[in-house]
Length: 195
Length: 153
Image (cartoon, rainbow over all chains, first blue to last red; front, top):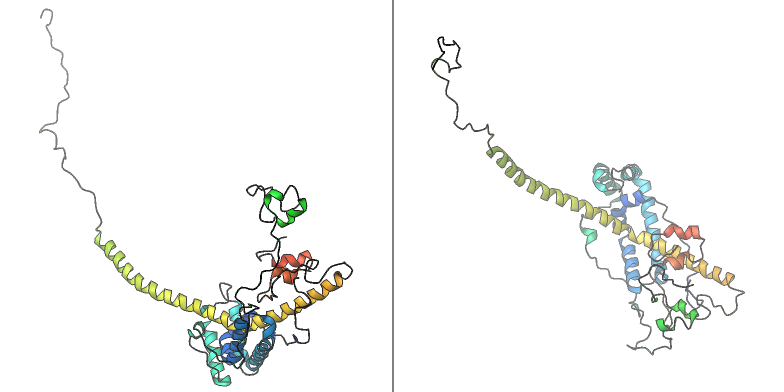
């Protein structure tokens, strides 16, 4: 709503990308191996997102992420489909409804074994993804990560008028719109924001 | 005494021959159960329970960590898709706004009759805002995101 035509929004063609058509228990089931397989793309995307703080600048990395995850699930479907399906259906029907792993340990072990044998993908040890991971990327460091706009520490002050004060409420009824957070009777329930 | 010639015969209520049996007046303490089995059981359960509880806690937090890690592994996939959806929606909102406010005089898209929201520098939010996303939607769609903090219905 506050986007003017000066702002550059990417076009529909730039945002074209296939969707990762996988349900949430399947995503949770394959999460560790997915993060191991698509490690580079994930790290690139998250680094870009964190540095630039702008989703428009990370569309390309996001596409890499989506394509890599689609590739991973395709590989799983081709090689390890049965164990994967039992695993994520077990997670889906898990006891507390939270898709927790501790009710499906057997299926998890079976899937991990299959992933190790057929796809040559080993799941990292349990604490791996909680640790801080460093990533060196070829993308240049963003020029304005904190969105300062100008290099001056104190940019010139613009002429913005002061909001009307409470004493002016009776004289200028049209000023009530600017008095959203200051009313004559703030402690009463009938304090109106505007007429 | 005058006038008494005969004595009436009656039977007196006397104690039995040999006297009454002795009254038991000594203290009789109640039957008691010993305390040491209970105390020792409690103590043993404390010690055993401490170690069991510590191992269970470790296992519990291991499972919690696993859940959190799986969530952070999935985060980039969902974030990328969300970014694309949101950018598409912003674009659609802006086009819709131009179409709607074409005939309104002095209206500039994204401003309040020329008055911009952010005055000194342009800003693009990295997290989607409810008003930006659902701004031009019908109320039933807006109500879908009712848990968002700044949405007044």
